[in-house]
Length: 238
Image 1 (cartoon, helix red, strand yellow):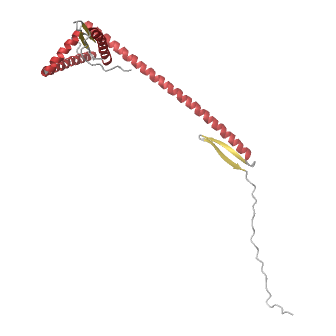
Image 2 (image 1 turned 180 degrees about the vertical axis):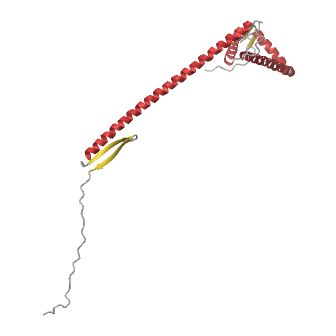
Image 3 (image 1 turned 60 degrees about the vertical axis):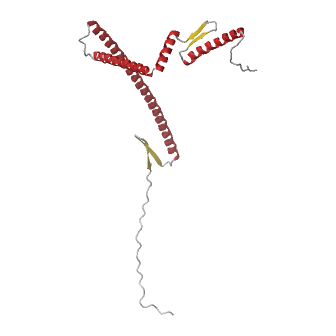
């Protein structure tokens, strides 16, 4: 069964009022703490009881929160002050960046061996040590890169060697199959025919040699002409 709606008004009974204050105060403090943790909010909570007792919670520092609150209120009521403060902030940021850039440029020139006359012996020794450390780091990185490349080349060489071995096995297997096929062909052919095997760079060539059959030469003679003389006066019939 759900709770009924409570009318928001002053509780007349002092005991009930004190109990309600304690419960709601603890709940409010708990919610303020959860809000600061979950949302990374800067929370400051101040509670005075009817008897004048103080209860407070601050996610960071109550004094800094109050100062931030007063500053924010002042800037909110005076926009020109807010704008001036922001402009000053950007100027300080720009000045800090310019100083950092000049420092970096000066260090770069020193590392390149320029503008060293103003340095003392100790500063030159420190610079020399820094350069030696940098050089060692560069050499170590270079050696590591070379080692990695050599390992990669060895790995590729092993793979190529394995591929060559596989190809050699396949070639040997195909050559054996060709020899078996040629043997079967020789057994199945006419005994008067032989197969000569010649090896070429691309495989085997088959050349057939057939026995020359004996040729029978037949010569046809020209037909002879016979002259038959017909009698000039044939005999009359009897």
